[in-house]
Length: 476
Ligand code: SF4
Ligand code: SF4
Image 1 (spheres, rainbow, N blue to C red):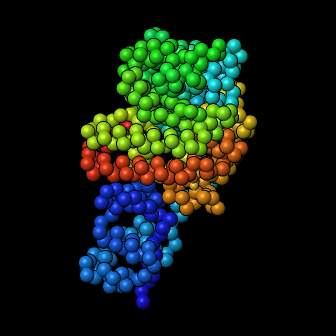
Image 2 (image 1 turned 90 degrees about the vertical axis):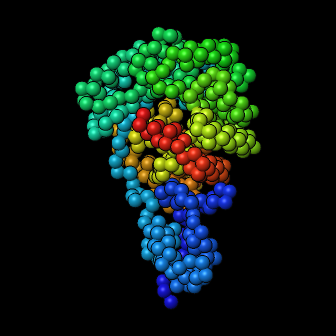
Image 3 (image 1 turned 90 degrees about the horizontal axis):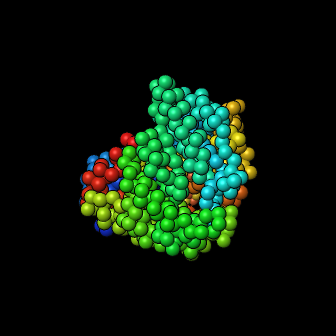
């Protein structure tokens, strides 16, 4: 008898989409439509391992030997079927040896002119007590970026807070500095900012437009929802002023699409109504939702039932995304859009995000943090802009997550898309940023299956949507 062939279940996930049997190739996050023969081989091998000769006998009435062998060769090459040879290790190395930081987040002021009840920022201060970053620290951050990673072609400088526009002088100084410095070095620089919009004026908007800032506005939806939590220091809702500023912003800003960033907290699960308000009524190009499950103030965290509801509502909005996609329109639902992009491009993420790997966040003292959510936290920092990155400590941390041995992630079907989840979420939930975010794995797996279904339908019925709306995103 020949070599016994077995199905490699850990690499294979199937999603039924109408009559089509979709194969999700887990190691590469790629999707294939299974043909009749592939499906039959999988079914036989799922029952029990057998040799190729036995397979040929079992399938002889419908398929020729050569056809079967050809398909088997492909499945073995994809490591969906094993002939006993050792499988390629998925994460080629278990250690991060080198980071290539191309993004620096400058926390330009810990102060914010608002006092949102749920704010996660560990270092948030009232406006009068805000700790501003000085010019020396900001310049040293950019110099550190160039020194640590001199070989990148495009760099990103993110202005964050508190409310970044409460330190506008520093932003303007740094834009001048960076444009000159990066151009002299023969490099490109891009600017990004998340703002609560309240301090925007026409003059500021025109300035940001001229420098092509990538902008996100924090806004939670219609007035009744927004004013629950996004309030002034004096306790007043901020919807009316934000609305006026957003109308002004969107009527003038044309250098890049502007996105809305929505925080979902206890009692707020109506994703569709919020999207409708922000996309259709206000005119944002994109709307992204951030469900809060592990914030410091537990009263604001979504309950587990609410989180289930949020994902169900995201799927309902996802079906509208699909309907529109089949009519060749995008409804700017960025959570799903990002997932579809990941599946389309076969993103294989060894780590969940760029924090610490491509990006570091600098606090007002010049200390280096994994990302903007860690500034001011008690997690030890990873160096400072003057003395440089503590590369050994940073590599140790990232390597801990890279090595999935003995974790639930090791055999999880979405391990190369979720990669253990957000470090800050884990830090807030388990006190350990290296711990996987086990508290919503099932919801995440279901969400990815939904993304696979939506992507398959778009590819079957209007693949031009993908080239129109997904591929061009890479260029920007
Ligand atoms: S955190 Fe959960 S969903 Fe994410 S890869 Fe690990 S086991 Fe899978
Ligand atoms: S650690 Fe979490 S919050 Fe920070 S960049 Fe990564 S995903 Fe975002």
